[in-house]
Image 1 (cartoon, rainbow, N blue to C red):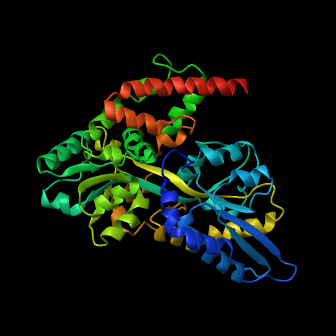
Image 2 (image 1 turned 120 degrees about the vertical axis):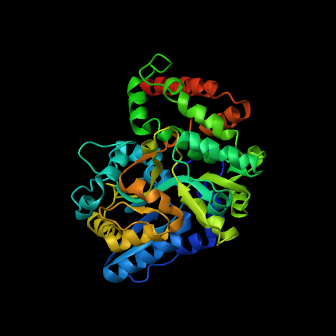
Image 3 (image 1 turned 30 degrees about the horizontal axis):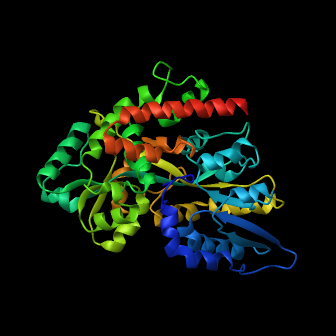
Length: 427
């Protein structure tokens, strides 16, 4: 999920409860060794659920590089560090609109001359540029790529002799067959708005509209946004939102009051055939039924099977602030974390994909259906990740699903974007 801060419960806040003790322990843990006169680095890592994992990596780095100690900073917010001009020496953060602010301001250093920078897949590295760039710099090294599609219950599909759909009409046929059999086709959790824009919105848009290109052109238009402008929500997202409207008719009846945790529980119990969620949900589903046979496929939204793509986000990216007084040591830590044996193992263990060239495939069978799309870069960053938090996309989706009026939602998005562009023009 990807994932700048958004309304509703995020998956990080959901997981933070179970990881709280680990986070507190790791954040307050003294480095295992401090050589006299050595350097102490601060490493900021955002994802609470992998604090313990990274803490072990940092201890390993200390053993391999005597004289450098690393304090693991796992506080939630990034902004206060930069406001106080005291950012961590190395950051490991979601690549999103929040991080883009610091890229644009030039407060993140250039990593292009690091040997590891040349090992990153170009098509993945280009994803970071869709949010922001700084002239002449590679500010962020993509570390972990999360790929999301439709999670489905293999047993239900097999029991009803259903194929994995490759076209939009096949998907609708599968949903109709499931409904006739008395099975909820798609489990939705509207109470947590991030699950709507990450799933329903992003999946419906991504294979029909190139989100990065759309938002680049939308930004260039400034306040000229509407049905007659070169690009607009009302015009370009009309067909995708027709798809979204249809999909929403196959939701569980109580979708409006169900939250993310409810969805994981219900899907784990076999109460629905499909679930529009990412790999972060798999570990929670496994807590309910570790033997549940699960697969994942990209949502088809056209009649051409070759149009299928998966939603991705750079779940973690590495960066070094220009304010760090330990640039050389910080770069050593980045190079250690980018080593194939380190980065590939992290992504394999955490249900993500390595960003390196010639990286091994993700071995988890639950994600096998997405591998070929990641391999050939048949992916897109979710459209919802380009919408700033000042525009309440999730709430708009809640209302559109209830009313069935997605057209009004798109006109509202255009109006909001015009106002946003107008404010930015006067700054």
